[in-house]
Length: 319
Image (tube, rainbow, N blue to C red; front, side, top):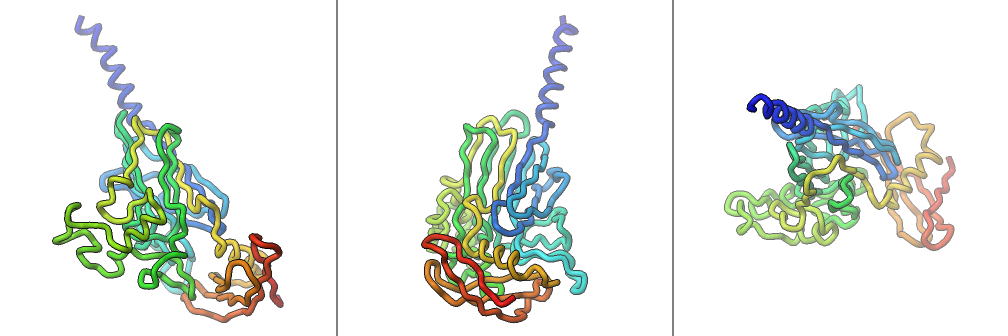
């Protein structure tokens, strides 16, 4: 009798073990109009996936398998360059993990960076996930479970365009990231620590309310759990993580157009921005920067002309 029950019991245990070991798949997509270098960090004691960092060109996606029960975070790095002369190796202007290579290899994102955070069920439980601006913002991000009955969460807005001056991270005159108030000022009230280290003692601030108004489903400060943590009952076989879910920004499309049309023949790493109005004739300034040293090289005067109301501007130059 005992032997007759033992075999089905062992089979059930083996099935449960195999189910727990079955990997989940993250499909990471870059919908921005510029290259993004995703980074992945597993939580302590959790096995990392086969890659912890890679490049995604505009429109490109990549599947990354993780073991069921995985927990950790993903983010996007921007304005990255491989330097052989400075000794810094691979480095990024935003979201840099400091590894000196494309792979992050157990290192997390330097703030400010928009984070997608996950805790996947070990065996048959629920998944928990969120988009967090607690460490600041650098890219719009969307998280979408493959399980269609589970909710998506995101921060689809380009907060760099709305960032208060005191929180801006500026490269060559352009805002490339928006710091959290905690990082900018370091006070207990902004960082939710010390005397403000409990939910009751740490209230939203004017800065976190600005983040929340722009991205209602994302964490805006440390204790923003009620409207920012999402659950997928029974778990999901995979998740989509999309950078720039609403598409490239006007600024990003301009830079892409300028590079394809006029700057491809330069043997350097460039970052450029333009300062102009949105829907009328303007003169613009194109800033060209050597990312290996972050030095401004020179300016090129350009004229922008809109072909019709609401269209993307065209570039004109003497190249």
